[in-house]
Amino acid sequence: MAATRFETEKFNGFTNFNLWQVRMMAILVQINLKNVVIRKKSKNLNQI
Image 1: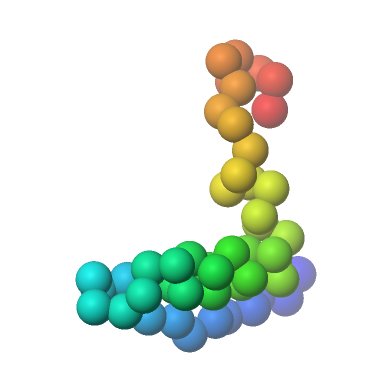
Image 2 (image 1 turned 90 degrees about the vertical axis):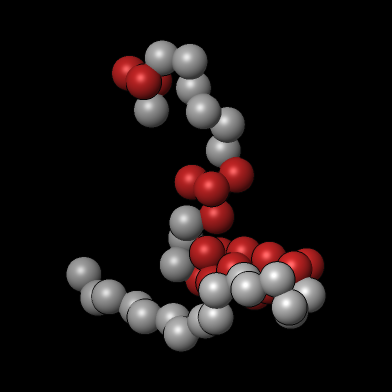
């Protein structure tokens, strides 16, 4: 399994939050983690 590394700035309050959020989501889509972030938490942890 290959590791992919992305360099990005943390949100510091001075940059546009929406732009930062779009960049983060684009990175998550590229590494197939978008569903993990947007999925609702299940009530029972065994359902994961």
